[in-house]
Image (tube, rainbow, N blue to C red; front, side):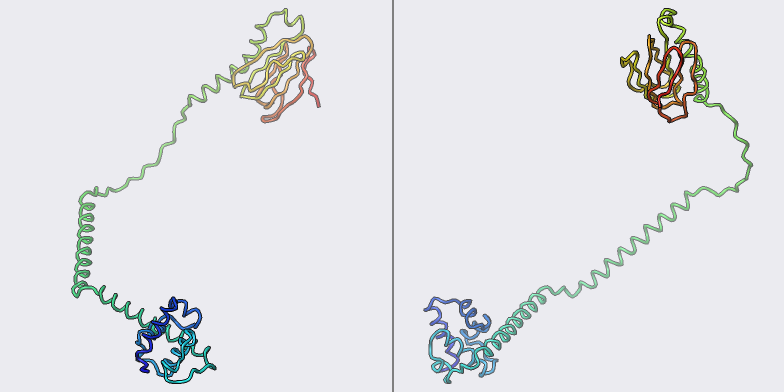
Length: 280
């Protein structure tokens, strides 16, 4: 039997058994490229020893006598070695095919001969345009630049003292603070004082206030700057202040200007006819 025609017969037997090359590859461990080459009788550059080994493995898998295709007895002692060699050769065949296809593609992508000249020309044109634009900008900036004048150093005169409107307002506000509480308290009738006492609260600055008159809450919130509140009580007034330095008190005709420092909170201040009592 001629070796060159063995591949076609093996392919025919495989197809009659409804087997694919992938099925053969899984069982024999021979690379797919080698199996295709064996069936196509295209392994002409392969050593006859390797070629016969592949055909023997393929014949044993298909259940046919290798003698009819190789003219020699099958070597059953070297199937693993032959399968390994088959995989290596298949990988080489696949590598050659990939390199060949890549060479063909690179050849198709070969740039034209005058591409280098075109690129150099474009770079030169861009460089010329860049230099021209910068030269125009430089000339334009030189032509519009004002002449440099000598600087004369003059000592700065002392800044005049100017009274700000805010300062005037603050002075007026302070004056209003000193007068507002007594006026508010005097506005109450002598009847309220006779029945108990009158408390006037004035805010030099905003402060949180809580006031309870004879056990009833009459104020709970923030008293804004410049505002005042007046309450009359028969027994007592319980007062809490968030900022002691921002509030003034007046009980009847007795005035309390400095209750504490700024930011200090005072709680449970007891106020009656006798005056103020701070609860500890």
